[in-house]
Length: 231
Image (cartoon, rainbow, N blue to C red; front, side):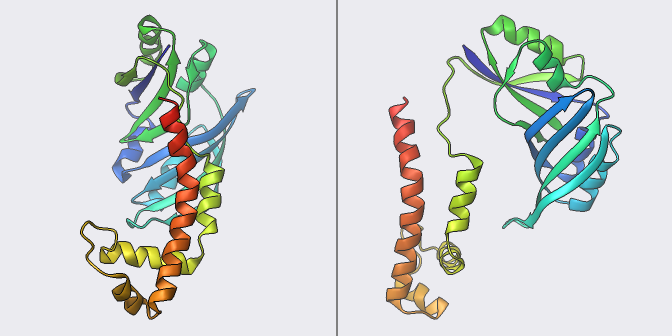
């Protein structure tokens, strides 16, 4: 078995139009039946309104509902949207499924291209997949891994639960610590200086740090151990 990441560029398609707004997206869930399509797309973009307009005006999209929206620390816009539409023609994903290919993980959109990770029997099967996708646009192989390896990763729900479990004051402390260089080697600020910056005692600052570190390390460490034992 092998895995391969295949990139497809659709000239003139809405995915190509999204490149203008530096959009990165992942189809995290999708289904289709009787020419009806429902999909959930998580995206980041430099221009939120223009990006949604491009998607909304696509001929296959009937409606788009924003599930969540926020601004990233880099100043980009992020959103999760639910798409509903009609499939007036065969899509690349459908073509892969109908021909018995097995996509792994979410389909990715980046730089105006769509990326598929495929589980394949051999390189001949990869060549047939490339030929199949070539009917939709120009195709290139980004990566080939000879042996299938299961990725040891927390689920999206587990990540979300972790993020929500860190109280606002601890998040504020961690952000300040990173900004001031506390985690740099060598450190650019002391714990006492961080405490003064936030207007708290050194003991309180230490408690914030230890509790945040405990939450993060106890979450991540089991996955590190699993990844090592999987080698």
